[in-house]
Length: 320
Image (tube, rainbow, N blue to C red; front, top):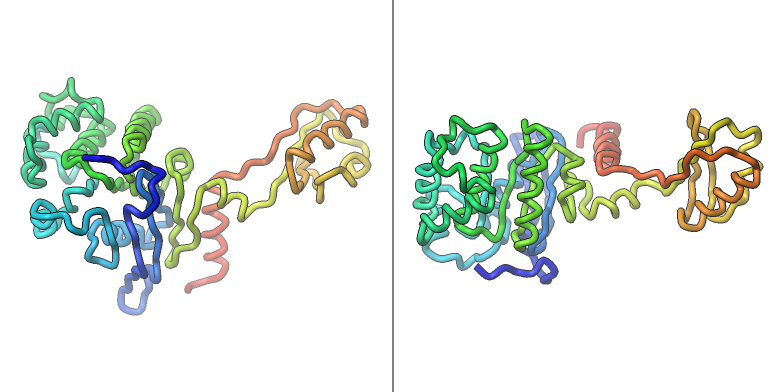
């Protein structure tokens, strides 16, 4: 299948005005976003925020969502009749729900359901992609959870999807197994596969995702992790000295690009407009003051900080 370049304009997934209500309770409402070709898109939110419903609807272009290939043809129509994702969309479900006792037969079964041409060849390609070709004859019951996750990915890759939905792909995995799954996702990104990733691991989303959306009843924000940090948090420098400064104000006040400062334990946190201008000036001022400087570094907020800031704001605001 010819892959779209990640830089190609347009959307692999386009969602418009999705909502879900349970009686009087609003799970989510008025959710709209687009996912670009070749993008790893993270979908984040607390339990009960509506992520699963959004992911489910995004797999089905008929539900206020436009996905790849609305003229998919017979194979995709057959998949939709069975309730499966269309053939140009792969979805890695919880492997405990999809694995038959023997992996090869399991993959043959799903290749048949997807009406994959030349199924043996596609199975070999999928197993090589997840680095399990040498385990092709093993039974699923003999595999670790990390390897079973790889089997689930292999199953999702059988139809050579252009869009792949991953639901908590590293849930319950140890750090080594999680890293292997991350490497697989990176490899799919390099091939131009569009990946819709639902995860509670914020460090995982920050490492893997080009953009993230944070959902909590409504779509709270969407953007690149670095851009979201810059929008929510001011820039600052953290300075550590061997001994406390006798008069910090005489050192920091009036320096270029420095707006304010405060002491935080054994460190000084300095609010700045431009770290590239402020850091050299702060360093020179400390040296001139005779301070023994241990470190000067820009304070970096994480995607977790962004997430908690938004969710805490919602909690303080009360029910919507």
